[in-house]
Length: 597
Image (cartoon, rainbow, N blue to C red):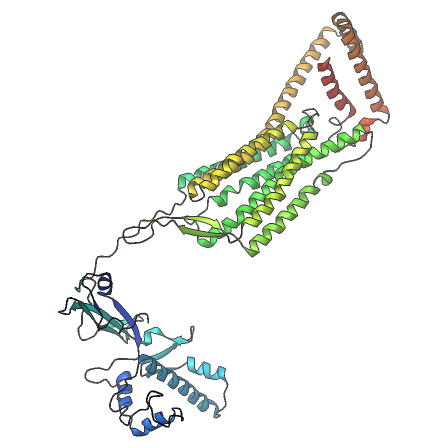
């Protein structure tokens, strides 16, 4: 019921004081048992109050006999002893609680009577009595008693409510005295389910200015929710679309050229894996672009928790692919150098990825079940002239998210360290087989984006727009760096090699046209003889070293073609016959040695 209707009655405050201003025009709403009418009402409360005051001495004696027996001195300070005219003298009027209690007792009695009539037996359990109570509907002392079957409580429309109003007037002694009066009460409304309010004795409700004129309604709240605008959201989604398109393009290009020497050397299985991981990582931008301007609170909750899932899975996939492809290449080269025959399968290189995937899943599932991220709207404390909040922002937050973030960071950062270690070991391999230089550039780009972007994201955490743009830039750098640096150099290398082969074919065609009567063997021997002569003329010592190396190359190639040698240690299917043959490996070495000479 809130504030009692007697609390302010008779209070005296200094005119113009804070208490006097706050007490003027207060409305007090109370649930009461009823109100006695001027002319008497044959219903409800009037009948109840009439019967209450008609109770005689017999009922007074019954009341007194229920008091403690140790009051031998009949001392009223120990307990109250009602006089003979306790009821008829109207010394005690029933309160609202007494009337509702009376109706509750009558409801239980009527339910018991109905059960007896139905069964013819006075025995019934509590469930039967409760069901009978819920179905009751009758005119009681407090009005039409109706029980709501859903709440199993009193239907509020059937109760009697009274509206009180406070008003202050000068008391003639320099103060303001406040009185509380009844201005309205509820009445049964047979034509509608809404509560009908009736003025009591034509009393008007007085507001804080002392008049019956309602105050002007407050203007609508013009709050700044700091939500993402359509333009800002479009920027982030455009970045995500570019990432998806580039990953799809490079994946299709890899598929179409999977039999090319350059693509075989780069292990297409892991190139596909990089494309897929980039798509998953770039998808993190989509839930980041969702707030309560485009989705419900439950939808925002789902978007919040999907961010760590997409980000960690995508990040793990990309860097596991970089680690696995470099580790596999290092293993094959190491075995070849030791003349050890061992087939390194793709499945062997994928084991670290599987381990990290399982660890990430365990942490993310635990986080989601125990303490998931929730969408919260936080008020900044800025209010208008009416004390209403007009500035807030939304963000994803959980009670204890820090431990989960730290564990996930440690797990995934380990893969970054391993990928860099394998790239360092492959630093001396030919560019055709190794991307260590490009992996280093990728790591430097991502490290720079994180070092700059992470502190910025923390600084602007309370600004959703700035935070979204910073995170979009970080994710974009993490996605575009592996794509561009892993695929564009291969496309350039393939183009140059294709152009070189085309020029070689043209030269060979011209030679054949000029020397139709000379066999290819004679031409090749003549060319070799000419090269030897030129080398002897220019630098005898250098040409001797070069010819020794060339003779070694021919010997290894002849042995690789017919016998067991280091080049046969790599089985078909590891990198392709042409790519990983002894001829390709040695020619790559020969080129470097020739440059040294």
